[in-house]
Image 1: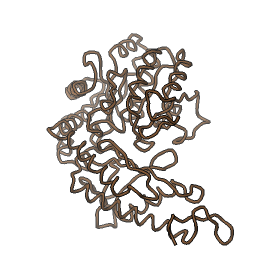
Image 2 (image 1 turned 30 degrees about the vertical axis):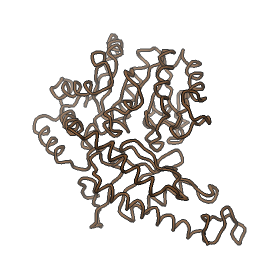
Image 3 (image 1 turned 30 degrees about the horizontal axis):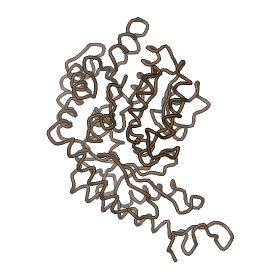
Image 4 (image 1 turned 45 degrees about the vertical axis):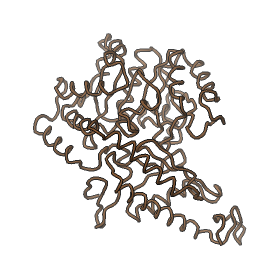
Length: 437
């Protein structure tokens, strides 16, 4: 990669640019090298580099701005700003354990909260397999997906997921400090929750004295058309929120932790807990200055509304393209959190992960950057620039149409003239799509 601007990336040896529909998993919120963020970076670099351990103006203003737009009772919360999503989720776990005096952490099936050692139990085994390093048991509860309940019911208020979740949380409440919650499961493929499910889970946590900790790293900061993704799901006043990784604009690894004042004060009573709030880049003035510009851009008139409207336009375009496709079962999403679920005529012959790999590879051949996620790599995940307009969306739709068409033909040519689930002449299994000759 040699340079990037807006939605486009240039690679060495390729004069034509690539359309980036991943944007570093959303860490680049407004397209590459946004002019206002470049100017903010230059401005802040001339003022200060690092300021630890002294407080600074940018830090205070950023904390106030975040609290003013969060779905919280502002006077009841404080903000800690540091680098790296995994680092800050680690801090959320540390705070939860100290304030409750309990050690266990629960999370949803298919959750991804980071790859550091302390986060391994919270991150699903489909993403990391370091079982030999695990020092504690993993407590998992079901994530009731919008399109289907894993226990077979269409209603999250009556399905078995809530009953199962409450049973697990109640059984572990004496040792369970917190439940980590991805409002939309990003690494699983941008999976949306069933209506009312997250609020019901929050109520369960409240009944059993378990902290409700929101991990908004992948889907927050306006990506759903709301500043915080939980605003879409009726969740207010969680105990802790970890903000989106795009807060640093793609230029600086900056993430904020917002927690109840009662949590911070309880932890601060013990002088030995001072290191919880430490770190050489804590409340970094340079990074906070960039983050303030990010919020200025995000909260400008019409930006969030356009994310929702253009996201709906993009999603409808995908649904129209693939409404009856043999390899794509559905397109789904909210704002610019979009996914495509893959399907295979015969999983034994052609796995969904194989289909995803071919689509990603063909995307690079046709100069469009896509990404597969999910426990088995069975979904295409799109995290485009929040400022991508409809003209670029139309280009994206045409490119994706061409990519999927060519990938489908390539997969078909590998198994021409074989019935689905049929056999080759040598007796091995073969595959062709229905209707192929």
